[in-house]
Image (cartoon, rainbow, N blue to C red; front, side):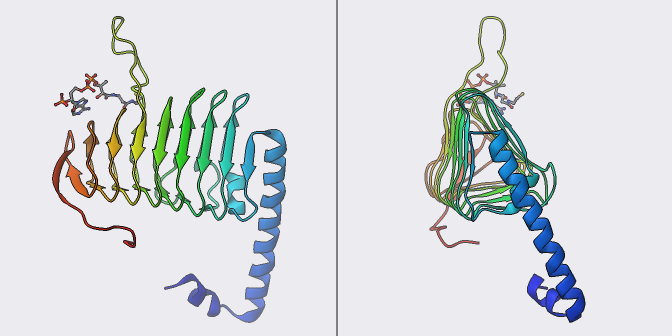
Amino acid sequence: MRQGAVFARIPVMRRLVLVAIMRVVSLRDRLRLRWLRWLHPGLEVHRSASSALARARFSLGAGARLLIGPGVVTERNPGRLSFELGEGAQVEIGEGTWLRTTLGPVNVVAFAGGRIQVGPACFLNGCHVSAKRSVTLGRRAWIGPGSRVFDADQHDFDDARPERSAPVTIGDCVWVAGDVTVLRGVTIGEHSVVGTRSVVTRDVPPHTLAYGVPAEPRGEVGDRSRSR
Ligand SMILES: CC(C)(COP(=O)(O)OP(=O)(O)OC[C@H]1O[C@@H](n2cnc3c(N)ncnc32)[C@H](O)[C@@H]1OP(=O)(O)O)[C@@H](O)C(=O)NCCC(=O)NCCS
């Protein structure tokens, strides 16, 4: 049932009380956002973004910048959304992106000097995005629950082979399903779909269905610009 329909069935007096409580909660969150912006000078949250962002965890190193664009939404789930930015890192969450924390935590981690560009209109659904160099998600890219995007191995292989990293690009209208891992250096072309439990180690061409470990092209995908 739609939320509006549920609300309409609540007696008028209780509805008024609920609205008043919601206003107070939202006001408190707005004040907390102000405080967080004061605490982290590199944090910018557009005034039309969700006040629930106040319940996220923020850690910004010196010179780091985190821009949260207009209409970015999330749920009021304390601690389930976290932004961790190392020194000089840059993260931008584009207009209308949904950071959905209901099915799992959303973690956005940019190491020192790393860059993450998300959106606009992306859907990060309980996933982990991590950049030592750069991770770019195009317009309307979706990342499913339990999925991880790493542009770096995060450890040296052995004493002779140091850690490797390379930029990751996920194109417009891509759907990365649940429990997928996208590894360093990968580009997933626009309008492609990656099936659940895949490990993406190589590029996926545009308009391609890929899945498996490692993910291989298995079929074609049409236009996903209006897909739900
Ligand atoms: C283990 C790991 C470092 C292997 O790297 P590597 O040996 O340098 O592998 P390469 O990138 O050179 O790829 C070699 C081949 O193995 C395949 N391959 C690499 N990792 C694979 C994996 N995890 N599953 C399946 N195939 C894999 C590649 O597709 C490639 O195949 P190809 O030659 O046919 O194209 C990498 O797979 C990995 O797991 N990185 C860690 C990312 C991570 O989870 N970090 C989180 C923090 S701990």
